[in-house]
Length: 264
Figure 1 (spheres, rainbow, N blue to C red):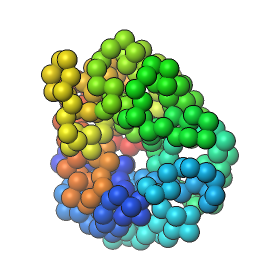
Figure 2 (tube, helix red, strand yellow; figure 1 turned 45 degrees about the vertical axis):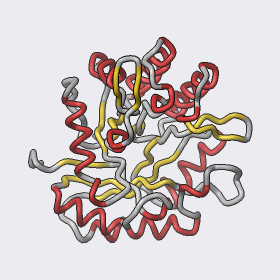
Figure 3 (cartoon, rainbow, N blue to C red; figure 1 turned 135 degrees about the vertical axis):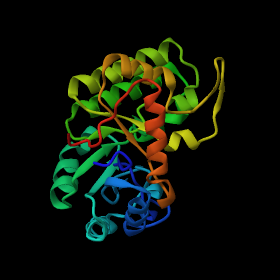
Figure 4 (cartoon, rainbow, N blue to C red; figure 1 turned 180 degrees about the vertical axis):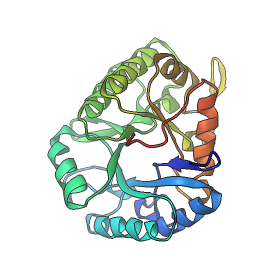
């Protein structure tokens, strides 16, 4: 692998309704910018009528197969490996479905774990809307359960909730320490997320901070030797390699050498 070419396994398309470009657009731009391997991980559709699983930010069920086909087609136009995956949350009720539908019927190459919510009854509360310790602990417990499921190739933006929590206090430290322990025990990479570096920074007691990635967490990950992957979380073809490089620059501050593939 050329040192000027890097990988990215967190890529969205216009099918999620909050990104632009289709797989061919991302593959073409990635080739231009220097890509060694590209993975698509758009938000997958839960079964129709299954409840409030945020249908507005994901493709429809009937689009899933055409999405996979579009990724396979894009792969034929570039000279590096291209993988078809999905990003999904964790709900134990759908454990078999994740495996049988996404990895089985649809033939996805991998599933990225997007811990976007905590399930409270029939509601799904966004990680960045968590403002109390009890809900935060439930969120972390649910996330750890997902890590232990063995379904996911990596944990996307594991420090996402810090966008709302903001301060590195005893609760944040304890929760992210437990999440990190689970990832290390299960040999699941945790992701430095390039998209988070583009969001408006938070003013905290220790100065201005990225919402995520959050420095104290990644220092802890480095000290414990966690497996780390750096991805773009690209929502536009122009970001697919640029944001992934930015994530690597961030990780390098802590002496982290990221894995280049979640399959390694």
